[in-house]
Image 1 (cartoon, rainbow, N blue to C red):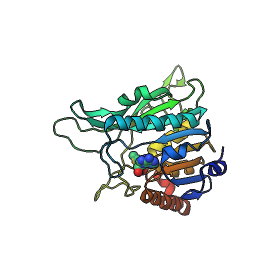
Image 2: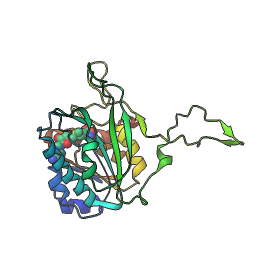
Image 3: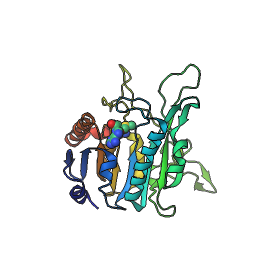
Image 4: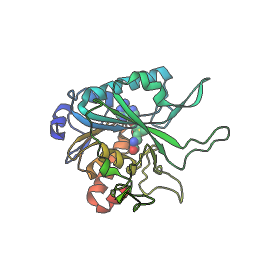
Length: 279
Ligand SMILES: C[S@@+](CC[C@H](N)C(=O)[O-])C[C@H]1O[C@@H](n2cnc3c(N)ncnc32)[C@H](O)[C@@H]1O
């Protein structure tokens, strides 16, 4: 299915460019309009129920029930060889846990086949006095069919090899394209503040770094595939999908964030140097 066919199902978007549709709507409501088995890849980071400006805090059970609903909807609309990348952090559970990784709470509620967890180690973050300062979030890699999914390892090899010319029995030990990036990724967070603000930063409080999403898009999808992000925020996944020639549908409930996405997409299309974000 291409974005023109998706548009017929979903209706007029808030904003569109070639191969990219942005909807200002509730993702659960809108995903119900997709046919079964149509999406190649979903990449998203939902609200964590921790009191960010875009969240209404819910009792934890209500939050988990809501997560289960949209995860099941993503499962229904994912193709049989499709992929779901889910970025999650941690939350506090009163009288039970200070910083509980949200994936622990969702394990029983997810119908996908789980491949593995990537630890995203992001350098800067909040400080802590009576526990270790958190410096990681998780990227959970799910597929529908454990034997049939896209993994373009050569497109995402890590070129930072310590001994690239080391040989064993006359043959190079390391792949000349680079090494496997492993399951721990050190990619800086998008930071704010005088002197330390990231170049790509927007006013959104939980923006993905584009380098993180670039690796997921290149590794788990192919040109022209359909990618969706049902919690689009500032539109990072949209820009990365476009830069990699994928089709894209993004859904975001807050209009002010759709406006940020609209501006970023326009900048990206107008100014070739926007591509530097991914270097
Ligand atoms: C963690 S942020 C995503 C940030 C994004 N990854 C980025 O790079 O900017 C989650 C987003 O989900 C949006 N959201 C919350 N509930 C939603 C819903 N029911 N439907 C669509 N979007 C929703 C929030 O407004 C917020 O922008």
